[in-house]
Length: 212
Image: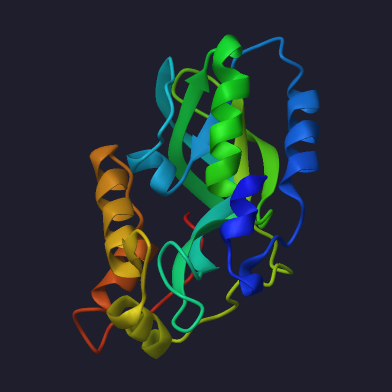
C-alpha cells in the first residue's frame, strides 16, 4: 500500500497488510453483509456507511489502553497509547452491519486506517446483541506484538496523558472521547474511568482488569 512510503523508517510495516486483506476478503466470501466490531475510535469515528448498529459484547477479549502509538497519538520520541483488543475477559462495544455490495470499498478504507503497518490480527469474533448473535470483524492485538506495551505503571500513564501528542491529538483526549462515546451508548468501563482520573489525582491506582 502506498501509504507505507510516507512512514518513518522506524514505523515501516511489521507485516505486509495486502495479503492479510486478500485473505480476509476470501474468508468473507462476498455472500452476505459484514458486521464490524468497534471498541474504541470506531465507536465515535467509524468513517464508513452502515445499515445498522447495535450494542454488542464479545467474550474472551477485553479493551485495554496498551498499544503504543507513535504517529496518531504520540511520536517516536514520546509515544502515546491507543486501545487494543487483548485476549481475556470480555468487552462491550458496538457492531455495524455493512451491506454486502459496500463491503469491498469499506474494507479497503478500513485497512488503510487500521492496518497500515499490519500490527493488528483481524479476527471474526462471536458477538452477542439484544437482537441475537452475530459474527463480526474485530482488530485484535497479540501480546507478542512489539506495539504491546506490557504492564504500565500509574506514573507512566500519567506522563503519557500529560505529554504524548500526535497527528490526531493527545492520548488523553482519545481516551476521554472513547469513554464519553461508550457512555453515550449506555456502556460503562470502570477501568478506563479510573485511568483517566490519573491525569487529575495522584492517589488513584491504575488497573487493567478485564470487564466482568
